Amino acid sequence: MSITADDIAKIAKLARIRVDSDEVPELSQRLANILKMADKLQTVNTDGVVPMANPLDAVQRLRADVVTEPAGAAALQARAAFLAIAPSSEQGLYLVPKVIE
Image 1: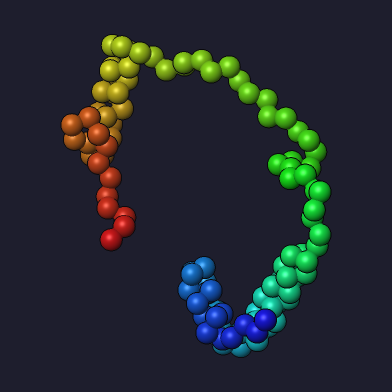
Image 2: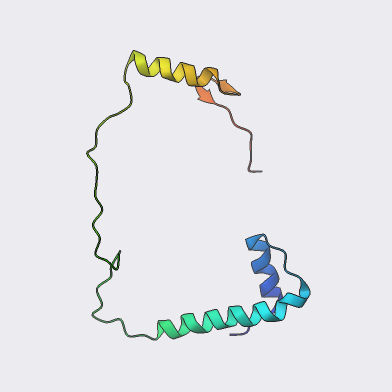
């Protein structure tokens, strides 16, 4: 698969990295090699192979599901204390600056 300079420019924009024009040929070749390797992996016969989440057959140790936060009046006092030191709050909620246009 051929990677064009436009493809490199799109990928760089999505990754938010600056790519100089003299780096484009090398990047194009390296990305093409990665895609060739992925294509090669797609040809491997995986019939009968059991999917696994961990190659070591590790088991997730789970802790007991126990409530650790205070309830009732203590919870309300803690909430009020946290809201009091917040830069901005309204009606019991934290106000944060808009970051998405």
